[in-house]
Picture 1 (cartoon, rainbow, N blue to C red):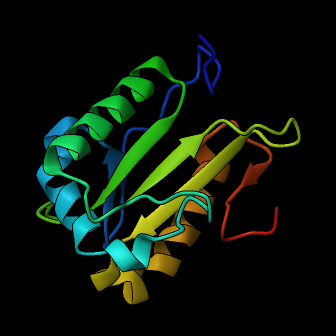
Picture 2 (cartoon, one colour):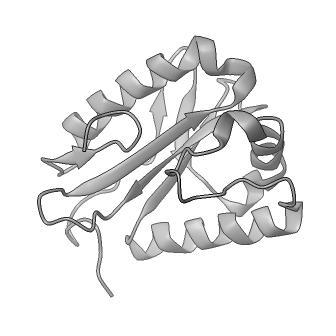
Amino acid sequence: MTTLVPADFKIPLCVETADFIIRPLMISDAVKDYDAVMTSLDHLQGIFGPESDWPTRELSLEQDIIDLGWHQKEFQRRSSFAYTVMSPDQSTCLGCLYIYPHEAADYDAKVYCWVRASHASLLDQILFARLQDWLKRDWPFINIEFPGRTPS
């Protein structure tokens, strides 16, 4: 099994700001995550590139639970890291971010993030800026690609 980070690396578990909390995505987040995804279908199309059709209108809560379980397991295995972005009171899922291994040797990781449609105009740039700072400060990556945001 290949891990994305060294075995002795302490994985950051929480980032708190006045606007949001970033923490690991878990199965218990499924209802809030599903609401964020399904109310943002058009907004999220292409977030993982033009070849991806996620999310589809056919996505069920059960399928979302399966997806979140897989993300949670990958986090435990240290092979990729999925985080939820929650409102400060954690009542609303505002989006997600994903840290994946990169296929190209020139990069350490590939990172995606999204904000639900209802909050995108207010939070997308704030989240992206905070994410870049967090990755630079607290993660062991040198070269990170942000597909759809920075040139490849």
